[in-house]
Structures are given as C-alpha cells and as structure tokens.
Image: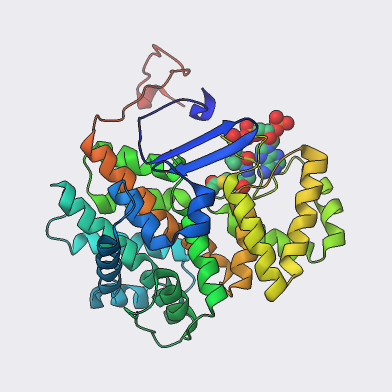
Length: 372
Ligand code: ACO
C-alpha cells in the first residue's frame, strides 16, 4: 500500500503497461510502442492518444495544420518569459506560462469534449514554443518564430538552435517524443487526473502534472543522469562510482521502475538504440559512459535503466542544455496528460481516498497561558 504500489486507481483505455512472459509491454490505445516507434510520428501519436484511433490521411493533415497554426505565443506570454529571472528552472517557467495561458482563456472551465480537445491541441502546439523562447531569452538571443512547414520535432529544434536540424536530429527527437508521450498512471498523470476529478480547468490539471514531473524520482531524473555522466567523465570510472554510491545507500538516477521492476522498460530498448545511433554519428562519449554505468548498476544491484537513463545521452547529442531535459519530456508527455484529463472529465468521480490515521488521539487542549 505504501506509495499506492499495485493499487488500481482508475480505468483507462489510453495506455496499457504490463509485464508479460518476462517482457515489458507498453501499448498506446492498443498499438505496441515498438511498432509506433518504427512507423509513426509524434503528431500521429498525439492524435491517437487524444481521439482513440489512428487518423485517416485527411484527418492527419488537418490535425498537423492545426497544431502548426497554434504554435505562436500571445505577446503577453512572451512578456512573461522576458520578465522571469533567467536562472528560473525552465520547468518552473513552463508551469507558470501554462497558468498564464489559462488566465487568458475566457472559457477556461470544462464545458465539452470539443472544447477540451481544442485546449489540448493549443497546449501541445505551444509547449515547444514556450521552452525554446525562454531558452533564447535567457541566453540573450533573438526569438526564432515557429514555422508552419516544419514537423513538431523539426520546428522545436529550429526554434531552439536557430537553424533547421538535420534529418537524423529531427527524426531522433520525434522518436523521443513518441516514447515519452504516454505512460498510464505515472505520478504526473495521476496528479493531472486528481485535479480533473474536481472538474478543475485543463490548465490547472496540466500545471499539477508539470509540477509533479520535475521531481527527481520522476522526469527530473534525466537531468540528474546527465550530472552523473559528467561526474563520471570516462567509462572506466563508472564501476567505482556506482559501487561507492550504492555503498553509501544512494540512488543511481535513471534506474529502477515501479511497474517494470526486473524487466527492461520497452522505451529504454528503443532509446538505447537511438542513443547508440546518435553516438556513432556525433559524440560517442556519453553513450559509452552510460553503457558502463548500466553494466555496473546491474552487477551491484540488479537494477535496469528506465526511460530517463538513455534520454540523457540522446539529448546531449541533440545539443539540448541539461536543464531543458525535463522540458523535452513534458513536450512529449503533454498529449498523454491531455488525453487523461479528458478521459477523467468524461467518466468522472471525485478522487478522494482515505488515509490511515497514525497520530495522537483525544489530547487535552492546554490554553497558551498555561503553557511554558
Ligand atoms: N538506485 C539504487 N537503488 C534503487 C534504485 C536506484 N535508482 N531504485 C530502486 N532501488 C532499490 C531500493 O533502494 C530498494 O532496495 P532495497 O529493497 O534493497 O531496500 C529497491 O530497489 C526497491 O526500491 P523502491 O524505492 O521500493 O522502488 P519504488 O518502486 O518505490 O521506486 C523509483 C521507483 C522511484 C523509480 C526508484 O527506482 C528510483 O528512485 N529511481 C531513481 C530515480 C529515477 O530514475 N526516476 C525516474 C523513474 S522513470 C520516470 O518517472 C519517467
């Protein structure tokens, strides 16, 4: 019961996670993650998560067009990004900007399925722009406005770096977004569903999720993984580093998973292949250190890497600054969060569990004047 381990808290038709025949299974709306990783695009996966089925060709074209059209931010949000201290963590910036977007929506309250879809598409479209704009503002660079002719992943890298990415870079980030898009009742999605169960507005639900994702036991782990890769610095130092950390009772970031436990997270399988491909084409250093750490953690603790582990070397080779790693996760996950908020609204019962009280009882109140 501690940490609600194995407690089933709701029904969902968005995502299935399981361990079957010693293999981790992950399906979005019934489609296997490996098949989606091989054949799909982030835009198609976002459609699938929101609407429940793969789009027809015309549905796909109009969905992509709508996403592209909604990328630009209102001037008030750009003003906000300019005024926030440049040292603010970009996830704090993201949640603040989402809240501000809510204040500008005259129809903020939950009303209908159509309206929730509209808000979801707008949030999916704007997440990358918020992140890229803030990064450029804090580093004193001019804003690169979104382009409607680029894919979701291509456009983000273009806005971040100020130049069109190579095909490999765009495809790699697209795959990363697909792998991060959804993962059942993880902590941030549960936070979003709890908020939705009170019929709080979509922005409030997404702020709850964004705040929860940043924690280092959840999405915040990928930034910590990068800190570890930098600290280890060379593959041969990985074993002693891991041994020492474990002997001190410390956790190795990017390892362990509440559901997959002793089997490999299917997303890690895909991310490791992607990390290797990027390492071969760009810088092999981070991948080589990661592999050495993976080996040592398995040797000393029998733990397997989770989705956050190889994400770090992927992002480093895509030229993404360390403190944007969690934001990249959020840019992918926003479609899953929105799908869950809508599912909760439409089959709602207030989520209100109980706690077992373990504190003192029936204590006699002593007036302040009688206390020492
Ligand atoms: N490093 C060292 N030991 C670990 C780790 C780790 N990363 N993860 C679990 N363990 C150990 C625990 O110490 C415990 O050992 P013990 O039985 O000898 O006491 C055992 O494995 C079980 O650990 P729990 O804490 O009970 O596992 P839980 O399911 O509660 O935690 C979690 C899951 C939070 C992901 C955990 O594995 C962890 O802290 N990992 C590091 C942070 C991380 O990578 N988070 C990202 C998760 S994926 C995601 O959110 C997208």
